[in-house]
Image (cartoon, rainbow, N blue to C red; front, side, top):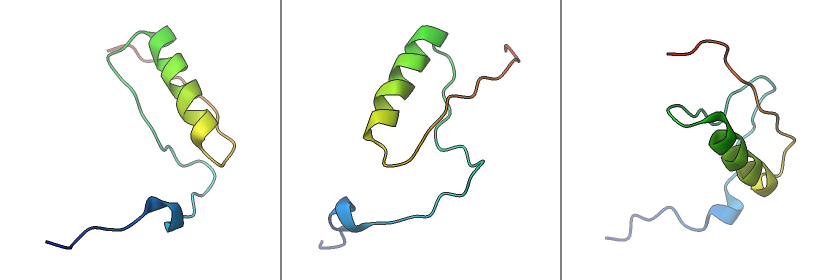
Length: 56
């Protein structure tokens, strides 16, 4: 009891350029792009969508 981390508003982590934050798999490209666009609007940093050419 009482081991909560507190409000996330005050947590900070430095993300260096080139770091992948989210990775999706097993969904159609349209769904993944839509989800990542929604997530990017909530992040306080510039984001970009990187696609892999390999299909598994």
